[in-house]
Amino acid sequence: MVATDLEETQTDHEHVGYDRYKELKLLDDTKAGVKGLVDAGLSKLPKIFVRDSHELNISSSSSSSCAANFSIPVIDLGSLHKEGNSRHEIIQKVKEACEKWGFFQVVNHDIPESVLDEMLDGVRRFHEQDVEVKREFYSRDTTKRVFYNTNLNLYTAKEVNWKDTLYCVLAPGSLDPHQLPSICRDITIEYSDHVKKLSLTLLELLSEALGLESTYLKDIDCAKGVFMVGHYYPPCPEPELTWGLSGHTDSTFLTVLLQDQVGGLQVFHENQWLDITPIPGAFIINIGDMMQVITNDKFISAKHRVLAQKLGPRVSVACFLRQHIEDESPRTYGPIKELLTDENPAIYREINVTDLAKLIYTTKLDDDVSGLKHFRL
Ligand code: OGA
Ligand code: NI
Image (tube, rainbow, N blue to C red; front, side, top):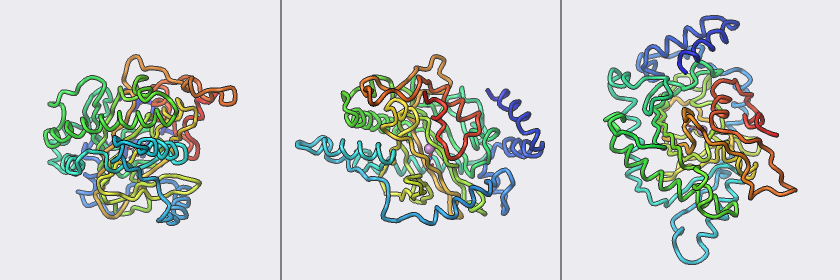
């Protein structure tokens, strides 16, 4: 995958000039990521990071208009197992959040806050450790279960994002703990066990919110693949010129995201970008493209992004419920038959995660349109 990626990109960029490719390659070859640039005292942004002026205009008019009291729903899972109507009420809230926002936060989820804090700290420690140790993990080989790099789509994306990432395939199969960086090994194992359990609970709630048996989404293997990423967004000298993470939708069934208290994450909702304000101890849950396909657009995969900021670092950890893109026989998914009627016919063809990943990583997607339009019938 690595070699072909580079070759493709080389020809791709020829008409723009060779310099961009050279700059990307230089950054890649340092194996020190964006953090390496910051550590070297960089004060002006290299061109490869600069986003286009069309986007600059959009963001300056919209990011400042974030209504403080208009935000994604916060759902308290504390009473999930209590007697009475509380489970039903929670499911109603989940349903509404998935239909209207594609995003919500959960609190009282039973995972100790100390585990969340230690996970965020573990990711920070990984990125801030001795660069020689970190370099051992640097790779673009997505067949590896554990690796780190800057910008997975470095050579294909329109602009480079101001962040570095540690990747880890948690499922299917079991991960040999020794593959994990020792600096965050124990907490990664503990955290991922907790998040896998929480994910199953969430899939039950989503199944019921769709009017299906509670085990439906688990039974069709929505939780079979779990991919974890630990993002590190270094402080940025010229934050208005670039993105922490460009606007995108997730290719997942579901994403379980943990962010620290720095902020900068935004969701696109009803034609405006809204801040997702950090809540200590909360997880952000969002619907991904695969879920939008199987629910036939009932649940929406909303666009989101992370602003680059002067202050930092910002750390976040995302667990993606999605089959691994290197899976040799990826399962095919289309809209769930039980949800279809004459009035609500299937609007997507059957797709698998490889189709989706190919689209995301090799095509320069039109910013304002979801990649899913390519799979509409
Ligand atoms: C992602 C993502 C948001 C964040 O990794 O897909 O949207 O806060 N991350 O880092
Ligand atoms: Ni995302």
